[in-house]
Amino acid sequence: MKYLLLLLTVAAGTLFPLQAGINARCGQGLGSALWATLISFCGGTLAMVLVVAVARPPLPTAERATALPWWAWTGGLCGAALVAVSAVAVKDLGYLGLITALLVGQVIASVAFDHTGFLREQVNPLTAARAAGLVLLAVGFWLVNRS
Image (spheres, rainbow, N blue to C red):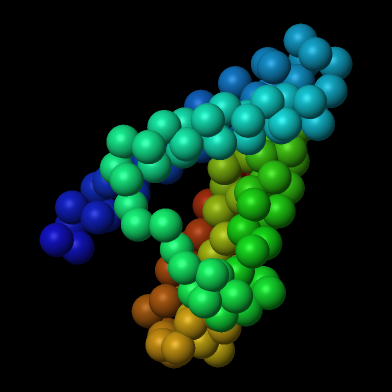
């Protein structure tokens, strides 16, 4: 099951540069990355409304909704910032530069979150093997973006 999830996640990852390119072109055409970001989220919202309508998951109860911590409602803000920055940055950084920069940010946050258990209960400490992988990632980032 883990390998299937890894494969699906890699496949989903291929959509991000595609989304960045589409949003960049939309932003260029409209003269604003902010409008492109809004359009992107409207399209995503419509897609999820259709998915929910077809899948018909049970409606969350008010008790469940109010039991959530305040920060559980902020995921869309993270997504909006990510989409807006990507729509602007892909033009100058290129797809590979954009994705490696995003990846470095994601990995730095992931190491900190795993090591401290932030937003989760499980702690996954930084090991020597993981640290070596981080060094290799940093070298790759530098090689890709040095020009």
